[in-house]
Amino acid sequence: MNLLQATGLDRFNPAQGGVRGMRIVASGLLVLMAALYLVARTYEAPGAGIAWGYLRAFAEAAMVGGLADWFAVTALFRHPLGLPIPHTAIIPRNKDRIGDSLAAFLRTNFLTATVVARRMSRVDVAGAIGRLLALPPQGGQTRAAIGRALASILESLGDDRLGAMVKGALASRLRGFDISPLLGRTLDAAIVENRHAEMLDGLIGWASRILLHNEGMIHEMVEARTGKFMRWTGLDERLSTAIVEGLHKLLDDMSTDPGHPLRLKAQEGLEQLADKLQHDPDTRAKVDRIKSDLLDSPAVAAWLDTLWQNARRRLIETARDPNAALGGHAGATLKQLGATLQSDTILKATINRFARRITVGVVADYGGGIVKLVSETIRGWDARTVTHQLENAVGRDLQYIRVNGTLVGGLIGIGLHILSQII
Picture 1 (cartoon, rainbow, N blue to C red):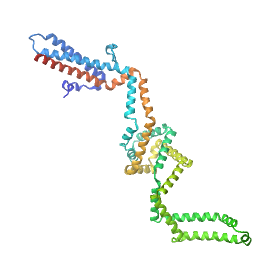
Picture 2 (cartoon, one colour):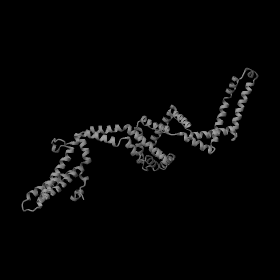
Picture 3 (cartoon, helix red, strand yellow):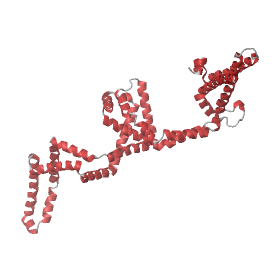
Picture 4 (tube, rainbow, N blue to C red):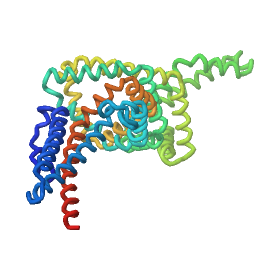
């Protein structure tokens, strides 16, 4: 049991008076101690009993404790009794320094990449999105409010900045992804399931069409490389025709005969390519260079920009009309996506990692601006506003300190009085 419970002051309802009510209680208790002191001082006399002495000692020490704590609490927010005593009105005089300290505290303890990354590692962004999509809010107002908030966020964020961030993150992800083993395993699986036959048929058909559209070039090449005698006798034409017909027959045989030697040789080449893609460092390095060249090309940059613009436009449209977006086939698709986000651990980890990187990037880019905003906002407040805000926040607890100080002072007074009597 603490002192407030012992005196019944814990039953005081702060909601009825707030800071003002607790200030009245603390001041009333101080006045009560003064009255008790006057009564005990009046009736204390030799032979009147020792109780008055104890009461006087309690009240006297309680007044000292209450007055000391009143001075300390008041000195935080204003000058006691309006007197310009040094080191009083601490908060109004130091509001700029308080703002700078608070901003520095936010910067050091909250708005650093390390702290944000550590906190975001415990946040399941993908799971939250999945639950929202799988079980969307049923209330129309709630759904519309979520949509408006999402649309406002997407529109308020600078398209250039946000788009560059998203496209940069996607390109960085693609650059860091080792595509060679995936291509190799895909080709292996296609060969095992005999799906490579369709690919070979497609390549043979493509070669046949190329040959068909370039027969004239073959005739010209043969004619340019033969002598005058062959051209005079017409042998060059017969030779070029034989070459073209032979190539057409070769391609036809390869397309119709699964056991054709050249077809088997092509399959062997595919098998070797699949193995090299997975295990040969030189081949993997070549593929990686090709991938980097593609990502650096203007065509891929334009494709990524188109992809982002379409996604952003669809997101805003969906957010503005969530009822349409969450209904029909699109709604079923979104619900399925929500279920996948909750069950697919790999996809969930990928999205959470992406969200963590985006958040850390935003903090790294805008953390200084947030800190500056906090500091400048507090600097822009006048002293009365700062005092009012802080006093409303902690004033009730400070008045409890006055109450405790009064009661503790009184108990110390009784203890000292007992000690003096013993001595």
